[in-house]
Amino acid sequence: SVTGGKMFKGLGDSDSVKCVIDGNAGAGAWWNCVGAVGRHGSPPGIPGPNGLTAYRSYLYIWKPGD
Image 1 (cartoon, rainbow, N blue to C red):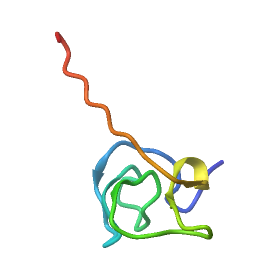
Image 2: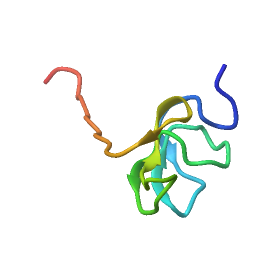
Image 3: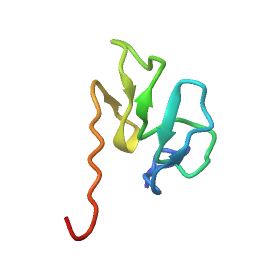
């Protein structure tokens, strides 16, 4: 079980000043960050999936019917 706001629950506005959009559903953290403007961990990265540190992120948007 992933706790502390680390489980992906859908993208939305981040509560953190270090991230624009995250996937923790307002849990007060910035895990699953998309659009990081801060650093996390050592070596520095961004909060990724399941409590791991990531070093890049991609956001793909799909419009049904295209």
